[in-house]
Length: 165
Image 1 (cartoon, one colour):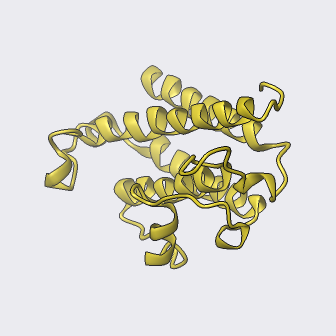
Image 2 (cartoon, helix red, strand yellow):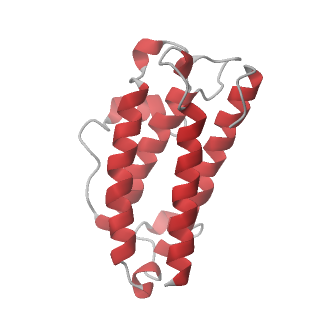
Image 3 (cartoon, one colour):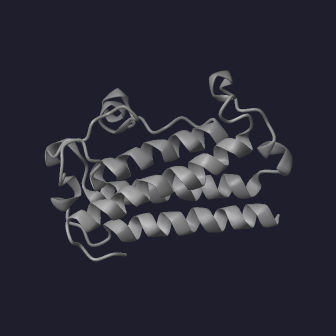
């Protein structure tokens, strides 16, 4: 399936860029905010972790890990506000480990899906206006969403005069 092959290549490229953007950062740098409310790298990686597990749930029905609880969602969810307090966030290695674990499961599921699976209606009726099918959701969450946040990381780096990636 050439479209799936292209999609997986984009998925992998986007994740590789996200990881390159944080590869040289210390845990202290991960929470630096050049201005209030700026999405710093710890928030971005935590948010992407939460979304990755939600994406996996959409495709498999598998619940997110127990540690993605209400406190996690309050810290990393869509309406959360990042803060520069390092104690409120996990070490960089935690995010990278869990992003990789979820991605491995996600890719395995995507490879096992049929074209008909992608045409199934989104299971949440409230989201069907924006994502009529599973395929629509896969494209947005797997490509645009992470690329959007990778752009935030790139800008965050430049504001601090860190090398471009």
